Amino acid sequence: GAEQRLVIKLDKKQEKKLQAGLKKIDNPATAEASGESGVVYLGRIPHGFFEKEMRAYFTQFGEIQRLRISRNKKTGKSKHYAFIEFVHPEVAVIVAETHDNMLICDRMVKCNVVPVEKIHETMWIGADQEFKAFPWKKMAKAESARKRTAGQEQARVKGLVRGEKKKRSRLEALGIDYEFEGFEALVDQGKPKRTKFDD
Image (cartoon, rainbow, N blue to C red; front, side, top):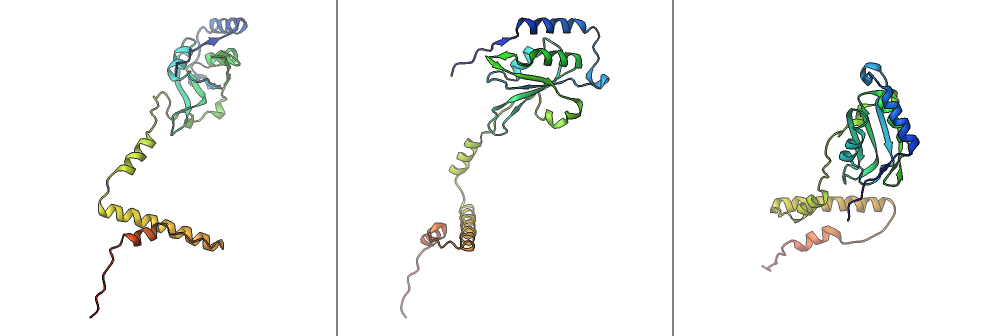
């Protein structure tokens, strides 16, 4: 589809507050030295506002130490929230105050400073890394199409029969009398028939 145009809107009041706050910071202390939080939570992120765009936008307010958008591990799709760690806690406070309820692509985002006691290292797993979704479907298709040796095929069929027997046992335990041929019948059909000769 067509790429979404990124539109970020701060109203005049927010813009004024932001500029005034940034001017007040003459010699900001680092978050590590001050013991204060430099981490900002950004929620309700619209599609299209990803790591690259986020870093480019927020770097104008202050130096970013880490940035992570929460994503689905399998599909790589954004979960629509992120954590941004600024080097200076004063910048984090100003950004949170001026960007809460800010419009990004006509979507009102939520923004607040994460308290120190709620910050943990697992928040940053995969931070600053370009996410590459694992090709699960492609791998499954390749595995299904892969030619197996006679031994591998025999082991696969044995596994299927074993699973089927467990299923039959569970049904019997529940008092369900259900007959179905299943894999075992197919295995029996595949066995070579022996011709019996009379003496």
